[in-house]
Amino acid sequence: MFEFAWPWIFLLAPLPWLLRVVLPAADSGEAALRVSFLAELESLSGRRARLRLPSWRQQAPFVLIWLLLLIAAARPQWVGEPQPLPTSGRDLLLAVDVSGSMEYADMDWEGEPIGRLELVKRMLGPFIEERRGDRVGLILFGSQAYLQAPLTFDRRTVRTWLDEAMIGIAGKNTAIGDAIGLAVKRLRTAESRVLVLVTDGANTGGEIDPLVAARLAAQEGVRIYTIGIGADPQQGGLIGLLGMNPGLDLDEPTLRAIAGQTGGEYFRARSREELDSVGEALDRLEPITQQKTLARPAKALYSWPLAAALLLSLLLIARDLWPQRPRWPASRRRR
Figure 1: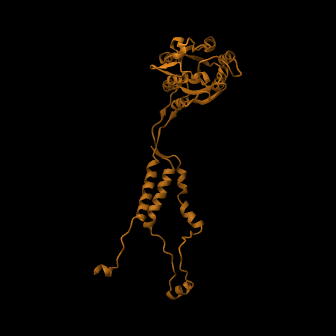
Figure 2: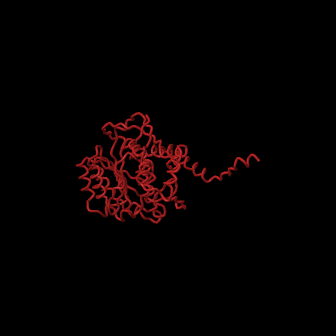
Figure 3: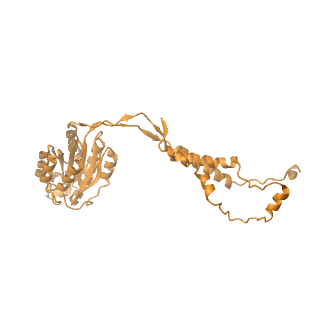
C-alpha cells in the first residue's frame, strides 16, 4: 500500500507565494529608468500601466520542482503486509576482555599466528551473526567495564562494534567482577538472561570480586558461560618454544566456579571448533516466549521525486546557459 510518512509536509505548499507577498522585492542590481510623468501618460492614454508578470508556461517548471520536493520530503513509501517478528529467543550479552594481554600473538588461525583479541573477533563474529531471534549486546572490559552495544536485534551492528574494539581501550588490567556486575545490571529487565564472558587472565582490577559478582548473577537468574583464551605451551608459537606457558595467567578455576554457580559452562577456546560448542550449548537452552509483535516492511520511494526535481533543475540551468541563435527581423529574412 502506498502512503506518505509525513503528509503534513504538504501544508507548506503555499510557502513560496506567501514569502513573495511578505518579503520586499529583490533588487536586481541593474540600472532602471524612472519615469516621473507616468501618471500623466496613464491619464492621456486612458489606460493604467501594469507590470508584466511571468506567464504560466514560465512558472510551471518551478511549480513542478517545488511539488516534487514536497513529495520527497513527505517520505513516500510502499508499505507491505504485516510480518511477525521473532517471538522467541534469548537476551545475550557478550563481555569481551580487551586488556593488554589480549595482544599476545600466541593463537593460530588457519595456520597463521594471530593475537588473542583478533581470534576472538574472528570466532565471535560468525557466532553473533547466527544468533537469529536473540537480542545481542556487547560489553568491553579491561581495568573498567563499558557497555559498547545494548541489547538489540541488530546483530550486524554489534559485530561491527566488536571488530572495531582495540587493545587497552578500557585499560590494561582485567576487571572480571565489574564486567559481570555491569551485565547483571543490564540484564535485570530482560526475560532470558545469558552472559558469555571471554577473558585470557585472572581478575586484576575492578571493585567487585568475580565470585561475589557470580553469586549476584545467580540470584538475578543470569546464566554465565565463561570462555578462556590462551594457547597451550605446545601451541604458543615462539612463546611456547621458549618454555613459557602462554596460558599461565588464565584463572580457569575461577572461570569454572563462575559458570558453575550460575548454571552455565566453562569452555577453553583454542580453535573455532571449540567455540562452536558454546553455540551448541546456548541452543540447548529453552527459548523464552516474548510478546508477539508485528512489523510492516516499508520501502522508501523518496529518491524518485527527488531525482526528478534534480533532473528538471539541471535542464532549466542548461536551457539558460545554452547559446541562443539571434532572431532576425522579418524584413531581413525575406531578402
